[in-house]
Image 1 (tube, rainbow, N blue to C red):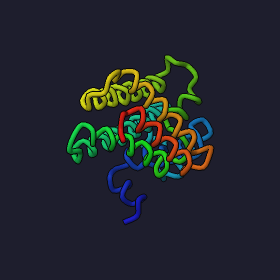
Image 2 (cartoon, one colour; image 1 turned 60 degrees about the horizontal axis):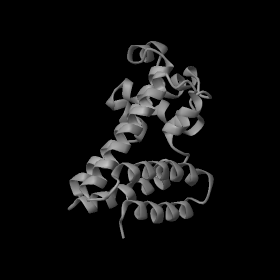
Image 3 (spheres, rainbow, N blue to C red; image 1 turned 90 degrees about the vertical axis):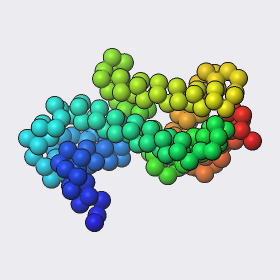
Length: 191
């Protein structure tokens, strides 16, 4: 079964969200119009409005989907980790893997923020929630691994994540990954 057939089988909402998410990430949110999304998804405007109040709600759902995917990756790592130190290492490796395999056109949250300049917009609210979760999760991992200054280290790891996601898109992704891993492991106190 093709990916398109799988999302169609999952339901029109999921299919529409999958198509919109791919277009938003590949081409930019503001450059992709609703008509294009509907055409590529093969659904009617009525179907879209049955599931989303408008394009902004579709953008919010796209970012919430991205957030859920990242959180699921962290949950899977937590299930496999044998110690807090191991979990911290898996988190750092997971960020590097994400930047070089999945999000090869930059960070979807940073990209969305560039297109939604109003800090009070609901889209920026979703971005802020994701970043707060990410920072808090890293802080929790650092504290559990017994690192001093978990807040400062978490802030630095968030900044390094931003850098690897953007840098992997702009520069040689393998060099950027190597630089990220060296620095992030150092900040996290990992060998």
